[in-house]
Amino acid sequence: MKKHIPNALTTLNLVCGLFSITMVFQNHLIWAASFIFLAAVFDYLDGTAARLLKAYSEMGKQMDSLADVVSFGVAPGIIVFQLLSLNCTSCNILERWHIIPYFAFLIPVCSALRLAKFNIDPRQAVNFIGLPTPANAIFFASIPMILLIQGRIHTFIELDFMVVLFSNPRVLAILSVVFSYLLISEIHLFSMKFKSMAWKGNEHRFIFLILSLVLLVIFSISAVPMVILLYLFLSLIYQKRMQE
Image (cartoon, rainbow, N blue to C red; front, side, top):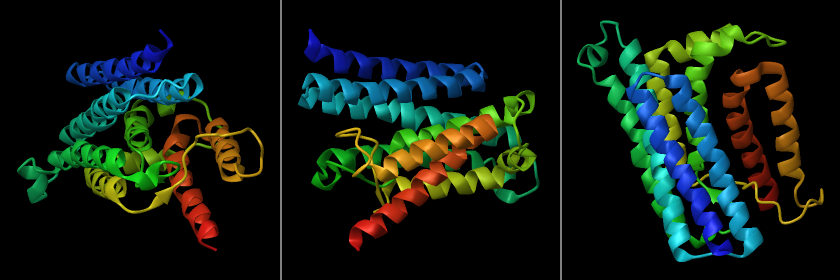
């Protein structure tokens, strides 16, 4: 039975992605975002279970990528499409012709390209090349939460400018383009796979986890985009250090 546990967790990841898409159709964006976060948990657990149980399989690898396309490609893409559709009200010609919302389609397209590349790229056995699809999906899933519930949550420092920023359809469209490029870029990013719990060799991972926790305590849900940007920043530092 143990060889089926990772695939079962992958299936739960896929189911969460489907629920997320369904919630967008029903205009429940908070629930849609929540299911993406839950899908990310199952995505992390299936890989962890496969390593602990030594239950690797080619089918599991392919199924994981297919589930990720739905949960971390299609689902966040539809969320961004909905947000852009709701906020495109100016006289800009792209918005008047309802073109800007379709920028969101870059997210699932580039997510699929990134996952296909991951499956055939031997360089990504340890670390990643290009932004991982779960990190990209979490970034965009946090946006409706920031827009809709951040004002109800008490934080040590209020970040009202983030609500204004993410409410701007042009900003959201630009972010869709930039992060879609990061998905298929050649930027080297560290993974969160711990081979041991020792500090040595895992310094960047522990620093990332500690700083992420601090940001989440201080800024609540508004910290999520910061955590993703922190991940990118620390990865660039780590890559430069490794090259030296």
